[in-house]
Image 1 (cartoon, helix red, strand yellow):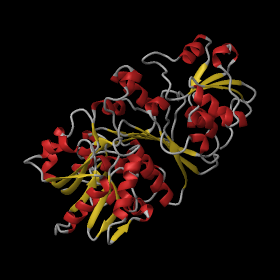
Image 2: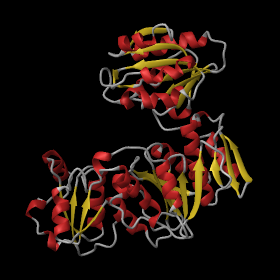
Image 3: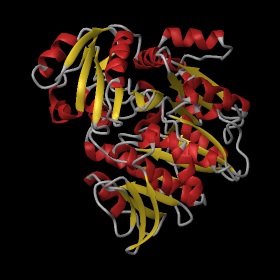
Image 4: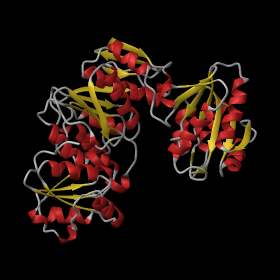
Length: 466
């Protein structure tokens, strides 16, 4: 925790008392602001009171007396309609910003550096990977934002400290002054249209990542979707633009269409990394994350050998295609985060001989869309309430067994995979379902998978999972 600067002696309203709101309220108070904090949720207000935060009903406040409204990113700014605090702030001509904007202002001129990552998909893995590579290279790094710690729970700014922040579109929408040393846009696909109204508005918010950058800063932009291409094409005369693709080789940029990362400058390859054997970076989506991490690391002066060494040791994010251990040559992959078929597709596309654990509470459409990947599945082990429905889809196409519970599925899959002589064999938990029939959330389900694997005879767990 450290003080927020720029609001000393001023009245600041803060709406939203979840994790980031509580942290920002305390930072503003430490910085000398008079903080008027509130939430529409009575339990949140009471919790704030019990934790010692002074709360004020903003319905009773004259917004003309305020210097700013700090709004939780989860609160509607524009769509489907502005929150009542937003209406009052705009009527009073009061600045509206988020905790990440307050943070960005507080680290200005401190010598700290900011790497900001956004995109529809892959933000968390890319953020974690960039943080891992920079730390492995010996830099002073804190990782937070939309992943992990709220920004004001990070260490105080100082010269040479690197902040690596995942930013959602909601957060960027409240960051009018965003100007990262390295800005990363991974991709844009339809999402959060209930909050942004149209794809045009959603893409425009993402584009703010680069709007205020200058020529000593770096813009990394994925160019495998038309929305991101349009954003890249509009970056002129500001940041150093580096385009990224995993669908085609670029004559000028960073690309990895076959899993070989290459940086090319005016047609000449200047760096190359083979990503295909890196356990935590399997699949085209992870190659894209790796390209972004490479670009960010080199922008910060990290040498190629150090990047390769760090990527080889990246453990991956928990519950996202995470290799948690092995029994002999059989790898056990925790992809519990795959709560629908679209998410499971990425994992199925990343392995060639799969003993697949699937099931739970299925989403609309079930697993029918995964049929192009059935040839990769040696056998399936079905759990939860979706087991019978999944069995009907797999009948005659993929051998399966109704395991009912996750621990039993792990035991059965380990038995069958252990008898397989193919070194490509993996046991993959990628459920394509929600967890709520047996587990509180996907994290608890993933932890149960790790526990079951650890109990297998001969299991050697990755160090992060012991």
